[in-house]
Length: 187
View (spheres, rainbow, N blue to C red):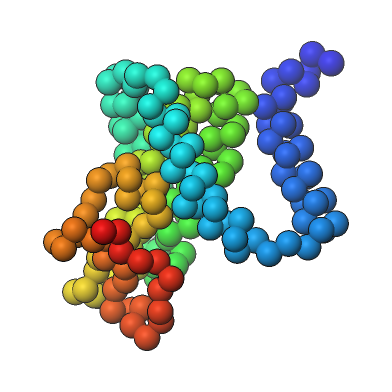
């Protein structure tokens, strides 16, 4: 049974996923309200509690930032090389490759594998990834637009402190005209 010990963090996450899968097939529920609760209440609460719970060391923040920048740079270069070599140009192709899922899988896995200190660092990585996703990601999808605004879930908004010229978070670009957004600017 010694071979299972290194796999215990991963097995814990996959057992949780499997139980959710079984529950979803047993009991049909509307996930829209659950998703909104997670995005607007759960994730910001998790980020706040993980980052406020223990002091962050400047060296850890710098190491995480440099490592993330290196990963994004290398993956970005590989995307450009692929696009040039194969003549494939799609912004939708680059986004899911460039922006990793650092929240849903990364945070629980870091908690199970490394404890609270690992969860804190994984949460910081999630905030950094979310910031890049809702700034660089929006910029990448709207390169031809002169009406690009930053907007994202509360995790990004509260962790960055961003507010628009009017003190509100702008909600959409010209590509979204005609589509009503349920998200309202913060006042």
